[in-house]
Image (cartoon, rainbow, N blue to C red; front, side, top):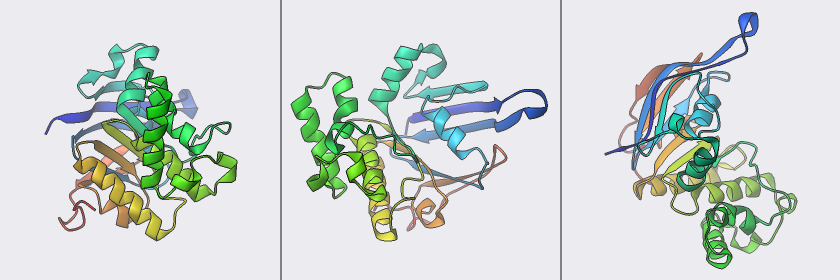
Length: 235
């Protein structure tokens, strides 16, 4: 199993002097193709910072990041954005949907930015929305959708195309338990098909669906554990 994501001795600090905050301290982590890793920990433990660094959205203060064998530090901002667009799907807590685009246009946007013709890109977007139970809402704008529906659109956008690394920050937070289980099953299936997944969650039940659970506290990896096989089995 080759590593799709490799973090080596990654640290991140904010501020300086008396206001200096160590968000991450010497974190090393590898996630292979087909593997889903859950990150858990108290508020302020560095979970979202870790996800941002893994998605090339935050630059580490020290340490190295590789995605699919490519060192992120060697890339200029344009190449980094291209790597993120082609290889990485990110589910943000705030959804980050563009208000002037419909649900299907939001989902197809990364494909079209990468040069995919509009018609097949939109068709693929509608298929991704259909997997979320939202095909009938494809032409609605974000402000016409509930919070849970917007969350599912954001997840569809992260999963569309051939992204090999899926990063999700509390992807089930706005969903009821049944819909949350469906989303976890989709993430499991995407990893079963060869993607690598990194999931930040406060829900221990959803963390137990992962292949490995990483516990962060004060920016330090305190523990890595493998759930019982039945809990981590593909959904």
